[in-house]
Image 1: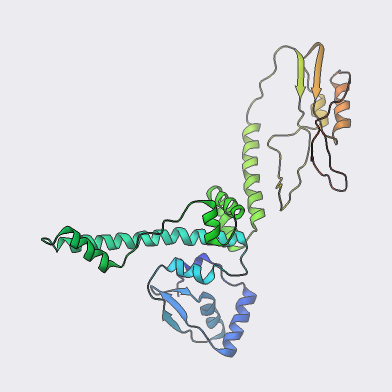
Image 2: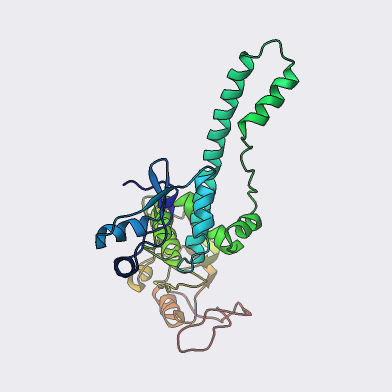
Amino acid sequence: MDFHPAANIFPLLDDQRLTELAEDIRTNGLREAIKLCGGKIIDGRNRYKACLACDVEPRFEAYGDGDPFAYVWSLNGERRDLTADQRYLMWKDCAEQSDAWQAEQQAIADEANRKRSETQRGVPKSEVLERAAASSGATLPDKRSKQTAAKAAASGTNRGTVERMDQLSRERPDLAEQVKTGEINAAGAIREMKRAKIVETLESTASKEAKAAEGVYDVIVIDPPWQMKKIERDVAPNQVEFDYPTMSEAELAELTVPTADDCHVWVWTTQKFLPMGLRLLDAWGLKYVCTFVWHKPGGFQPIGLPQYNCE
């Protein structure tokens, strides 16, 4: 038997829990009937599968009228096995399809009203509209607020979840679907989304030709693309890769720095690459003069070391 699209918004039980449900039904019978909407299961998919698994005859009853997507959300929105990210994505799916369903119902009612009015010529227009409204039972589609706070309140989540999952849904709906079904967690999806965007940027950067410097300069500031590695974390800051290609010490040493006589050269480095920076000065034929630091109230925290407070 087919499942209703509204029911399919929520994931089915895993094999172990489905087996446990089948054993319970085998022992105690099917306690709650399976609900049908338009001949499709709208509530009780797991019970139906469990009945088939344990060879128990399923029992059905009609769901009734009303918004099927709102109905499914009311039954499943508070499931404790859902993460906040899953809950919001499922609410979003239910809300969008509910709006579409209500708009369709309104269109059907409007068409019925139009046909009804054509058969009531001679009756005042105001009375025709009153009769149509009274008989259709249709309501206007729910005008849900697009504000983040309203979405968070409606879905029982928070603003951060709404903002992250809205961005994921816009930019990578495939990953949003995997979060919703529990195939990956939200942190992994966000990381993959950022990784793909950075790879695209890197490929674009690598395909461009750098414009060669012409002539010599009295003042030069160099920010070498050190071979750093960012740390992947499941919490903020969610670091992945750099937005530009990096270079090895040998590659940097081969650069020709276009210095004029008495040129001032400023080389930026972090704590880790300070020794390499000093070696590069020799490779470039420069003389070390002094060190200036950029004082930071809170810098990078390397594992097992104090927090860096300057670069």
